[in-house]
Amino acid sequence: MTARRKKARQDKSEWPDVAWIAELAEPYLRGYLPVPERGTGLEGFWFVAAAAKEGKRKKGKGGKKANGPCRFFVGYLLRPEKFAYLNAETPECLVFVTLGEPGSKLHERLVLPADGLLRTTHTYIGWLTHRPPRFAFFEDRFVTMVRHRTMRDWPEGKYRHFSGNFFIETLAWLVRSGLIRKLAEVGRE
Image (tube, rainbow, N blue to C red; front, side, top):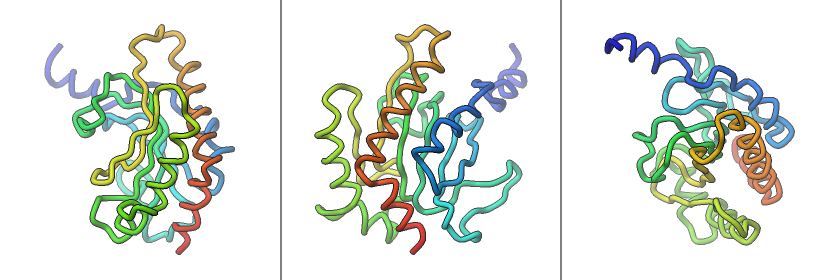
């Protein structure tokens, strides 16, 4: 395969059908707008608080961009280069929350303090998840709180079914913790 063909194959989605993820996540992420992410090593959807000001949601050549301060990602990690600190065994299904780059005022307010929203939520969800994979917390990274699982031991024909179960379970814990509601409120500030 030529380098040009290989690049073209990488640029287009390796997961032809991810639209179902937005439908699956909608009941859990009410009030968040789904924005597709394809071809960047992540395949799935960003969910941005609908209350985010229009100025924070930019249009680019690929359509809407997920630029709100509080965002969730639900989907697949196919290339781990940008996320080496996750020690991922790709392909992986993952759900994560980000508050933007470390050092921002929002990040400093909700992540760094001992009683910060993300830190206390991580502790609470840790009590709920008694089996792996557990949520991981990174106070100094773009991905603040994440739950991810390799799909290498799943039959390819079951990727959608098993990852759907993973997404439902993970999103239900995020709802139960109150994080989804609380971050939507922060997005309105």
